[in-house]
Length: 417
Image (cartoon, rainbow, N blue to C red; front, side, top):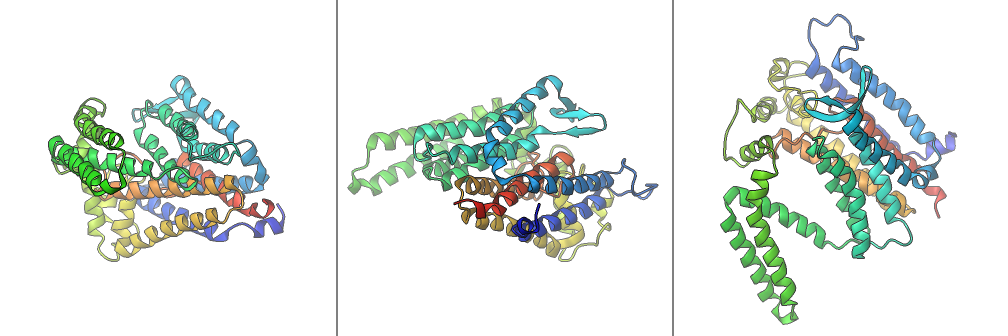
């Protein structure tokens, strides 16, 4: 790796990555530290193991950046297929941890393939969309792209790990950037509103609302002579979907998922049961005030009131010990990283690199947005970690690979014509 090549790496992304990983580790240390630990370097300590994963991730970064830039485009499909095989292999060789068969066990080390599948899927989507024969404005090409996205998600759901599978919805955004019609985004948004609205206020109100909106749009556009068959088909589909929500909610969702939705919607309060984590997380964040209680001085954190706080609920440690100011700093660092990735993606000469960059930004945003919404009680608990913060070697490596493949692609932008 020559100095010329190294000078082409985007050091803004690298510094933001290092800042987030460092701050994340300090919060993992605070959330998992106990006074009676004999030595800092005991691998039985959560923060020591995470530090080991961080050091190894730095070695991984050097490896990723040393690979020829064309490798990722040339072998993107093969990496994707290998990842699918790894996901399927879990049903035979996987290790069950906390009720989910999502890990391969190699002695003391466990790896979660779903964390690496995000980067593999991003490579596959980028390769497919950038193919000269692919046109994302065509329905048949859209279906193939959706199939590439759906396959890993379908393999992840029965592990069961619906939270990780939910992340694959983020791939809709890079497809939209490359020519897919915006109607898919609108339909997805409208379906989400119908689903939540039906649960919140009832099916008849929502079905009536959908009917009124559809008829109102038809009347508003009457001078354009709209296709009434299409309008009434969409209206019927929306009303039918609203009436199917309760069946899906009661027969497809597991009880724990129903409970979490009901808590967020205010239908039931279970501060000591299914809602305990979220309730304690909100207390921890709220108690931090403007400047926080100080590093390792959080009473909620030290008292272990938030179960498994070093994983999905790590942001509650930030809120309690660093306060509003520290929380906003973390949020701004994430926003800066996502915006930087988008800016670099837009300047790529290669469509492959651009699509991959948009995929990276979409995945990071989805994780960041949903996790903080989950920790603050805005969204139901769905088990989505905070990138570079939540404890876990597979998660850290997965996000590191995802991000630094793009750094390598961006550094090779000069070579594309």
